[in-house]
Length: 370
Image (tube, rainbow, N blue to C red; front, side):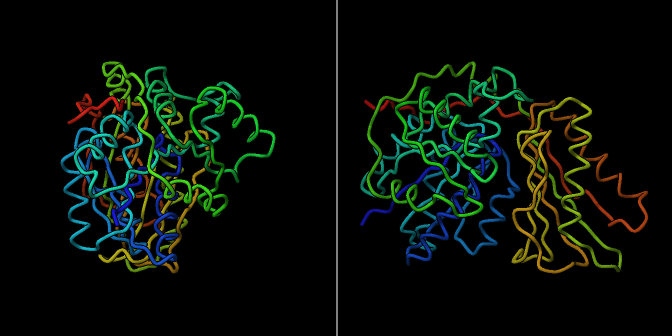
């Protein structure tokens, strides 16, 4: 039988990784093998570390979105096939990427249709961000060019997945669903909480029950798309953490670090798209803590916790925000430095950092679909 190829898109901070790993775990319980393909503009991904810590076969496509790294995507699938022979490939594209049907799904079906059954494209949505973007509630958001990408992601979706239902009450959830259904009436809508396991079964069944229909991909202004991506600052970093002979509560440390970054960026008037941190002890990464912040005025939360205090470890930092990347770098350096003067605080050493703006997207292939 042909392997299923499942693509789970959505804007930064929507909960794609949690949803993708929930699907991988669901398949494992059902006796099926999953291969996970993560994606970013650069290397050093928290998502890859999370998938590996979960025991899943994982490959990382770095240096650009799947649309611009199509050949690398195919090669990653081939490596997974050789290593694990997955029944289902779960691909998670960059959160600022769109036009996935025309540049990934349709070329895959055209060139590799004998190998893969292409599932409907899912786009995962953070409800609190969507309520603001769609004008249902006031609050901090992004500029119009960034929101152009957000809207195009929803426009091309076969399945719109309203995630984090645990964060909204019934009335707000119903208002959001109605607004999404009115504006993006072609898509099927699912309401889930990937973190709590609510509503996943019906979404998973729909993705894997039948291939995606071949419909026309939405028109896209690549100039405007590139301008929107260029407004986003990207930062990846690696920080070594030591208790200097004492043990560290890694879970509390991650949340504290996230809050310190948040306070600095809030003072700068910067909107955070996603700050994701992992802390692992040693080199195996078998046990890890993961903290997420998905908005400047939101609360940082742990999605995974270390089981015990640690003596030393490594922290991966993935920060995406509508800001100058040099500013993000300075704020990271200042946050690391802020621990030096605090009595009893962990000792931090910045081992690596890179910050940049995404390049103009130039897809390898683009097929309209019909």
